[in-house]
Length: 253
Image (cartoon, rainbow, N blue to C red):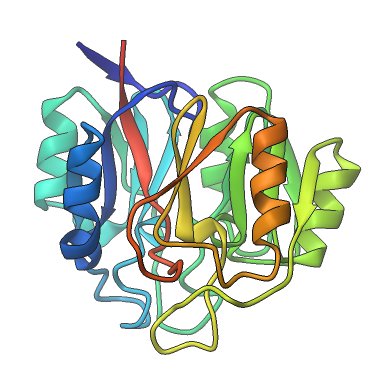
């Protein structure tokens, strides 16, 4: 039996996960081997083609059965599947475009009871909708890609290479590992982000799209996780690469 993941990004034992269809060839088999079902998000035609397959720009899990979808997903197989499992879907009134930050309206990051976001890029009605799920502390950051930049480790911990995000999160009482920028592949860009290259798959496990061996802070990252009794799972033998993260929706009871 499965149930909805209660806290976004923090499944107790992931059963079903959403991510960009663009990355199915690389990630489906390793996720299958971990007994997780994949649901694929089609490319977003309204944003930069290099980022069109990034689920964190098109899908926002608001906790439990609540999911926000970019307008282009109306009538999609993703919407149909979410409806079939009883999801409460909201299509916010947003217009996404190719230039940053006009693609970031759904890109915010919940870490336990805290939400990292840029109040200039996330519409007020989305913020209001999120607060219906209880008391959340919103942390305003200059970064529009807050979900991309933040690797959620647990309810009070994250990893990021963004100094501004790190400073704001630390000031709010979160435990932050600040790492060197770069060293994460993203086609068409000088580099990607750690949040886009990782996602929790269980209380005690976090998945990375590829190996961290070439990252200068590999040892520090693994130590940060080990201190929290979290195991790093490397899904491929490639150097770690940014997919716009993945979104755990269902977990095993």
